[in-house]
Amino acid sequence: MAVDAKIIAVSYLNTIPFIYGLRHHSKFGAELLLAPPADCYKNFVEGKADIALMPAAMVPSLPDAEIVTDYCIGASGDVRTVVVVSNTPIERVQRILLDPHSKTSVQLCGYLAKNLWHIEPEWVELDDYALLDTPTDGDAYLIIGDKVFDNEGKFRYSYDLASEWHRTTGLPFAFAVWVARKGLSYDIHDELQAAFTFGVEHIYEAILESDYADRDYAYEYLTRNIDFLFDIQKHNALKKFWDFGLKVKPKVNPG
Image 1 (cartoon, rainbow, N blue to C red):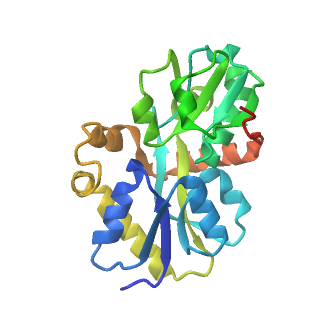
Image 2 (cartoon, rainbow, N blue to C red):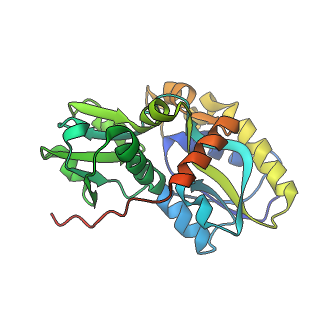
């Protein structure tokens, strides 16, 4: 069945099994767009996509959408690509500069600041990644996605947000889930499920076909750090996360 729908997914390493499944599942055909997580939300609400890999923090704000498939971008331990880094211990951090590419990670950082780290930092948007090359004492930096690999080992302190969430709640976490507009055919839901199953079962092939074929960390990351199954524990985790609400509103960096 060819599907006449527009799908938007995250343009990071953690999504390539899904992309592989969408491109190679024999019954599936749809227009596929790739974007950072925050832009997945923007394109969906603007009607430019019918199905989206949605930042988990934004799902409650979408009354015309429903979660579909048993798949997500999640983690049951270290996720590795959502971290707060600093040369100052987190309990002494005065300001956290926030990667604007992920609304979920920003709000998760706020949850941990209140419930685990017990700090009340100033929240500022990270508008220039070059700041990571000249970090300021007392500042911490939330960074996500592929850029984390380029900054591993550069800071004295690194806090993996999935691991920190598990430390305080005992639960895994889901950073993004698949949503579709309500009323979309259930045949499409079934085809999505089948395509994603195919992709997750062919992670090695997905890497070889991607731009990450020469990255020695790719396979370990996708099979040890990322947990693609959206199970009952991750449902419970998101319920807890959503009940906390959206607390963090970063200011524009004054420089």
